[in-house]
Image (tube, rainbow, N blue to C red; front, side):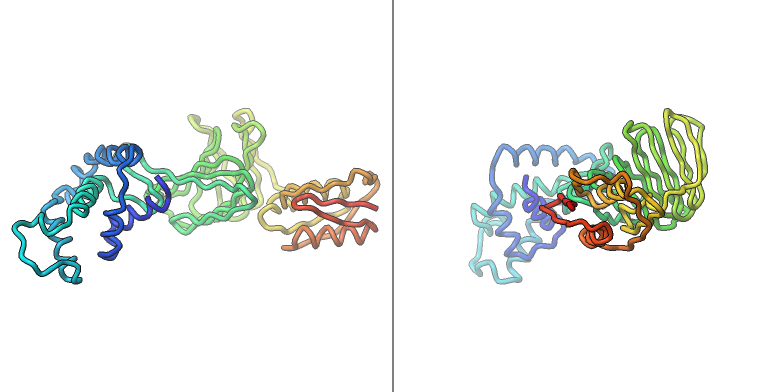
Length: 330
């Protein structure tokens, strides 16, 4: 089912449609195998209503009556007398409305077409496909996803602040002592109350790096009593199910997120590699000998174009680019 149809269903079930929108929506429902399957899936959710008193006394007669009153109050019905309640509706509208009543038996849909029942919590996914992506979580926390990384979490997030991470992300977590925030990735679980930190999966998905910017973080192995606690500027490593900690000395460790760089007597080739990873571009220097080129400089929030122009000027190089590829030449 299309996203627009999901949204229409959600608006209808939430009672946010005008009467004319309801009529258009109901009469426009298509009888297809896909939609029949959707209806069957929603009917299976009836058990959920059995455990929610506010929903289980739903009355189809009252629903017809409410819709009739709404149509009548807005002048959308004739004033002619009718023999029965059902004859107030055109045949087409009766068919469409009967389909809608079956839909109403299902759980109220979310705007993204997500269905939730007592055994399967709905999950939301966010993938950074094109570059760094920012995700605002329901509790006010913010996540910066590095390119190619993904997080997922339950739609019931506020009750259990837990996310799954694949890749690398920087977290800014809202403080809530009553509900700790956890990040699961590979063999590891990070637990915090309110802090900012970076989590990065290594080539082996079971190995992980955690860097703490502010606050405190508890880094623990799954199905194990092993854990370490990290404080600001500390760095935790999970490798072959062993935990170690150290001081983070790389000033550019989270430059992919901040776009702030500091280089002190650094090899130019290493600087360019750092820029490639942070801006997700390719920098070509095939015809250049960079082995004896070193640089001391810093950049703050500048674009890759501006940075490469200053490097080109300093080393008397020409800079050109095509899409995400940059070329440095003499």
